[in-house]
Image (cartoon, rainbow, N blue to C red; front, side, top):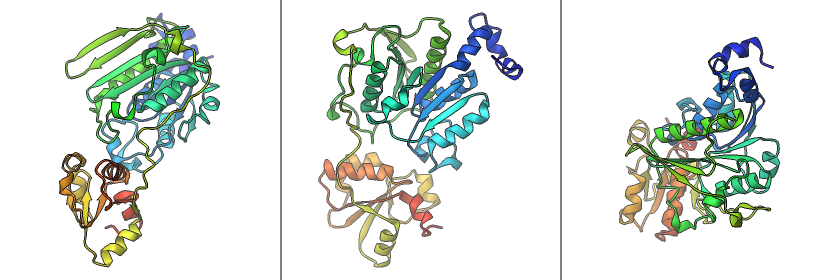
Length: 362
């Protein structure tokens, strides 16, 4: 039952014959779980919240970093370093007080996925890696949950719906997880900021259509959008029983994670190194305006330049990689150790943010 305030809030929905009061009540009673509150999750969550989806779950373990802000529109500069799940909850609650939120501030894995998924009606996958997508898909099939899928890459995006009324599953389209050498590096891949907005909004439209039981749901159809060419293509696919009937979870390796023992320097250790006046080289990987605003010396350089020109890295000195929060520098340190066999690479753990918080900055 909708209150008078809800009737007024959703009046532009209710006057539509495809929705009406009954449809809005269906939206209010729906339970949608969103995996990831980043580029895709931000617009999806904003529109689901505004539309009056009554129960929304958010699975997100990451913290806000400055490189997120170009596309993750839920967050602002003042949120840097804070939990995405908690910030999303606070901001979305202000947008619509009639929505019940449940946040899972944890990494999704095969140990917790079944318990998290069991009480939700629709799963919306906004993750950014193949292992999580296959995990989400398999758990959704086992628990008979409808899965709304989105993916983004540079200027392109994809949307589809799986497990809908006996239709195809994710594995009917993508049977097996790709090997590490078959996909771009998590360090080098990029996306233009508007693409997750477009794709995330499309995903929100599919969720709402499913709840209302209206329109042609993208079951058995993969929509591909190319912003550079401004083209949209539809690829049809059918259910493949060989891959559709998943009965148990498998193994899901996060390809961007590493078992390499990265050499990390704490801010205090770097300060001691500076005080001892030892010879070393610092590469600061941050944007030039951040470097110009504050730095601890060294050379400001792009990650891609160092990856393409490892000869720029001296092999007779300790080399310290620095970024804002220590994530980009750690990924580059891993790459240089594993792929180029550098043994003199160190990462400033926590980045410039940790350095400042330790009392060494400004």
